[in-house]
Length: 173
Figure 1: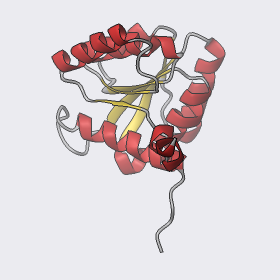
Figure 2: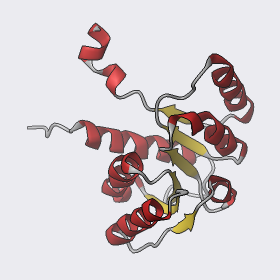
Figure 3: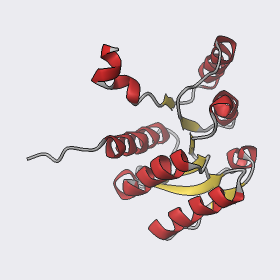
């Protein structure tokens, strides 16, 4: 009998698998670990992104090597969460630009306030990182078009969260 996955488990597996698949094209061998940076260590960043990645890190050969949040307390909670679940202590950044400059980070997740999603995603793809970004992606059409044009130019793999929109209740509405 198959075990049913919760939404959180499914999203964690999807996030980790997407990041893994995207990074295989740039790594030396399939046994190399994929390094993930977390941008935004608030509730969504810690309770979804960090938690889910840590849950599936062995199966997907990923590790969280960096966390970023402007709020020191949230950043330190993210570091503590990663350190408690693995032998690694991730690097800490208060500025997302500094995390994106880290050469050892292959991909990022973005769980920051909504008005920052496009700005940070554009910076991530220009820095050569694949990304998972929370919804909504953009706050207006001009911002969305600029972001999509940047993604096409830099040919990065990006996934945008749409979890609730795929539920039957949302589709029916």
